[in-house]
Image (cartoon, rainbow, N blue to C red; front, side):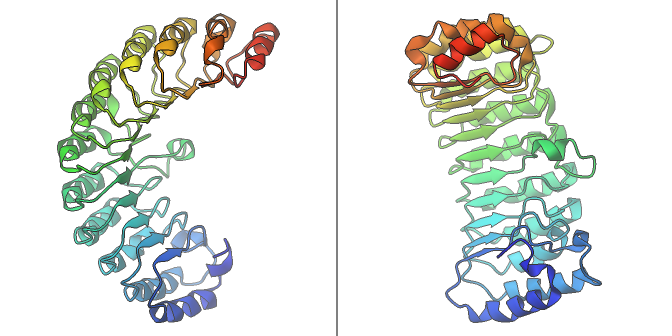
Length: 351
């Protein structure tokens, strides 16, 4: 579907009439089509969405459904999800789901035992809604991907963004051991706070298949980082860790970065580490540079938008010529002088 195709109510009605006839349809992508009350394109958007929702109930062979970026759609679609018993992938990110919508969605999802991927980022799910969803998650025994995270844009928008806060993080930590197939977890920008990070970190090693973890845009202090460092070496499948804009380099940042750097060589599966926009200084960069030669499988280290690293910190990576063919070090927007800029650029670093 094109971005604007379904902004016409007639097009929605035509699609709704056609869907039940597509008995072999397994994948439907209606993302970014202006569906929902927030589109402002129709006299009665709720009625139009209701027509589509009713048609979706009859597409029981559907395995993949993407309705993302249709702000306002989320509140209308939950009753239809209950009928999609073959669904393995569901993307409802940025569809305006609030606490009530999350409650209705949790009820609808509870019977979808085949679901493997659940994407709910950039919505309006607060603590109450997050608790409802968490209580339902153990029923999704095949779940591999859980995304409740917020993008940077959502974090900066007061009218957008999930916020599970500490209570939601605690509940999530309690149910994580039941998600034995979980490979990706994204709780970026949910204000889980330091204690929430501790609780989630303590449960991570019980997710043996976890490959990607995104804790970005949550303020995580020394206790949270310490708990994370205790768990990460036990996450034997973890390939990708995102901790951007967590405050890693502020306050006690040098100590937090040192602790993280110390355990990196023991994270043998880790290939991609993102630490952008953390207020990291030259000392923090030094800690990382010292352990990089021992991180044999690391292929990407993202340190962009840490201007306090400066020339002194960046220069520490300049001596790691042996790494230049194996690992990409991203130092963009780190306030490098021309000499260091050209030296690192010549070694193939992103500057």
